[in-house]
Amino acid sequence: MKLVTSANHTVEVMAVAPMDNNIYLLTDHASGDSLLIDCANDSAGILDFVRTRRVTRIVTTHRHADHLGALAQVSAALQVPAYSGVDDLKAIQDATGVYQYPLADGEIFQVGKTPVHVTQLVGHTPGSIALTIYPDGHPPVIFTGDSLFPGGVGKTWSDADFTRLLDDVVTKIFAVLPDETIVLPGHGKATTIGAERGSIDQWRARGW
Image 1 (cartoon, rainbow, N blue to C red):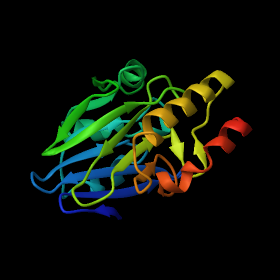
Image 2: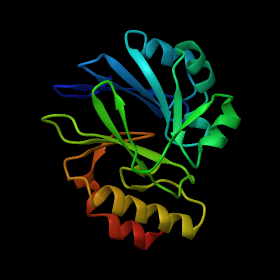
Image 3: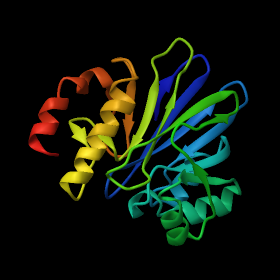
């Protein structure tokens, strides 16, 4: 299903049961190159999803098993490099056997002519990353993995992790992106920065 269409980009999504994982495909129109984000548990479905696209790299947003269950099979079939955040890289590589190229906080890489901006968001996992693009004539789009959803940040396992994640989300996402920015999370429906901005104090007060 197409979620975003601009003059120079298309973003498509497929959802994988049982955890409603979103798998995203970003295509740069000028080059025809595509980025595949999070190879969740349906390798056959993913390969069918991308069959008409020229995938040039795979990015895994974080180390949790539901986001990488098909990574080994899809990577082997497509024969393209796989990337992940520097602090989740070893865990993903150990779990899948797929060599991971590192993505660091603040890094920018290209999908065809499209710059993709990397943001590390610590808390849900140590090396979770978000990816942001700035399409021409269209609001920014951020792929947040499990770090930001409609209604709150991702699950954490300590007060310190929650505080770190919320602080990262506030300073690295809400403070720099406009309200019209489209947020594409790792599970469930899309939202916008503006729809969530007014709830930040409530999230901090409730602690999740």
